Image (cartoon, rainbow, N blue to C red):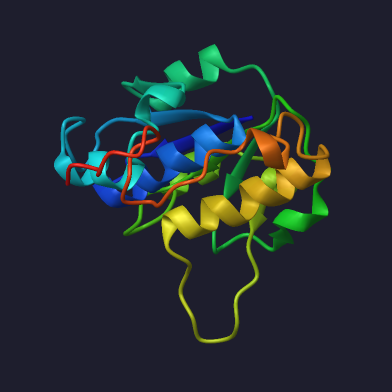
Length: 173
């Protein structure tokens, strides 16, 4: 699947999603403008040593992403009413999330049919989830629906601490 972040603003959130995409086999697409530089140390820290294990592309605008990705597109918003669990996900789906501060703007949201505009249920009187957490919730539901295709068997996993590189050396903050 493809994860699209439109104008992400917080480097550690994007770093966490780099790590998520490496572990779930999804491609990550970032739509400019970004609220950070790609060499930001917090981006590196959030993604640990998973950057080279993730297929990530930075796009100048959403139109260029649309031209590159022909799958079914789904927008995620707190303003939607259809739950993310009401969809049968497919491996080539495109999951679009807005920036941390304001979500997807009205112009982008209007490009999606209501059936392709989804939300994550929350308790009353709450605004939203953290972007990295919201993407993780949706990605794992979508991956579960396709039977965790590509997941490692237990003996294929690498043991270690999150403060270590895959070779066991300490991670440089």
